[in-house]
Image 1 (tube, rainbow, N blue to C red):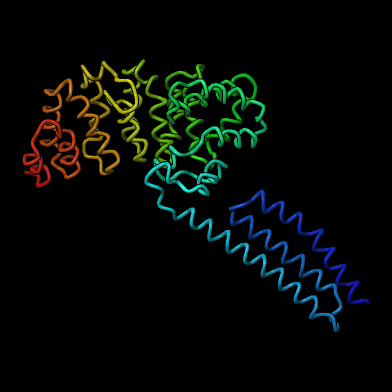
Image 2 (image 1 turned 60 degrees about the vertical axis):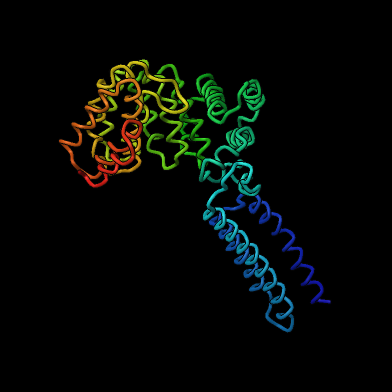
Amino acid sequence: MEAVGNAESFFQYVLLFFPNILFHMQMDFGRRGSLNKIYGVAHYGLLSYLCRCSFNKYVCCYSKYYIGTILLFSLYLITMNLQEHDFASRKGAVKPLLVPKAVLQQLEAGLMETINLSEWLALNQLSLLKNVLKEYGLQHRFEKIESAVDSLKQKTAPKVIDTISKCLSDIDETRYGNDVWFELSSHSSDMVRCWAVGGVSTTQRLSLPEMLKAVKPFAADTHFGVREMAWMAARPHIAQSISKSIEILALWALHPNENIRRFSSEATRPRGVWCKHIDSLKQKPETAESLLEPLKADHSKYVQNSVANWLNDAGKTRPDWLQGTCNRWIQCSPTTHTRKIVKRALRNMIPNDQASEFDSGN
C-alpha cells in the first residue's frame, strides 16, 4: 500500500509539473536555448523528487518513471533541434508556391528571416502583422490596417509593405512614441524591419539628413530585402533634393561597410528598378560624379554591379557621358575591379567579342 501511495504522489507531482513545462514549450517552440533550459528544469525537478524518496525496495519503480520521462524529453528536444537545423540550413524554394507550410508558419510567426525572394513573396504579411501587433499589445489596430491593405488594387509585396508602414507610422506619431519603432527595427523578422524602414522614411518631421541617418542602419542590414526597401523608401526624398543628397551620400561611398557604399549608388540610379526615374540625373549624370568616383574600383561585387547599373542607366539618355566616363576610368584605374564595372556598364553599347577585351585588360 505504501508503494501505491508513493506512486500516486509521484504522478500527482508530474501532473502538477507538466502543464508548466508544456506552456513554456508552446511559447518557446523552435527556440533551442529555451527548450534546453526547460529540459534542465525538468531534469532537476524530477531528480530532486527522487532524491527525497527513500532508496529502498521501491527505488526501481521510481527509476523507471524517471528514466522514461527524461527519455521523452530527450526525444522531444532532438526532434525540435533537428527541425530548427532544417530551417536554418534550408536552401529555399524556387517558387513562392513551393515554400513549405512549416516554413511559412515560422515566417508568419516572426520567428525567422526569409532566405530568398520566393519566401519573401510567399509570406502573408497580414498574418505576420497580426502576430506582431499582438506581441506589442496593438492587436486592436489590426482591422484598420487590414482594411487599408484590402483596398489596394495591386497587392504587390512592396505596395503592401508601404501601406503597412504608413499605418504603423500613424500609430507611432499619434500614441505610442518611438519605442515601438525601435523594437520593430531590430525584430527577428526581416519583413518587420522592412515595415520599420518604410515608417521611418514617411515620418514628416525628419529633415533629409535626419531621414538618411535614420535609414542608414537599414541600409547596412544583413538581409537583402531590408536593404532593398531601405533605398526604395529613401529614394523619393533623395530625388526631391538631389544635390544635397549626393553631397551626403558621397561620404557614404567611402564607408567601410559595402552595404552602405552600395546604398549610395543604388538609391541614386537615374532609372532604377521598381521606382520612379530621377530625370535630372538622366539628363545630367555628371551631377553624381563625386559619389561615383570613389566607387570606380570597389572590390565588392555587390557594389560593382550597382555602379555598373548606374552608369548603364545614364548611358540610355547620355551615351556620350557613359563612354567618356568609362574611357577615363580605364585610363586612370586599370584594375580588374574597374574593368568589371566598365564591361557591365557598356553591355548595351559594345558587342560581346569587344567586351572580352575588358577581361584581359587590353
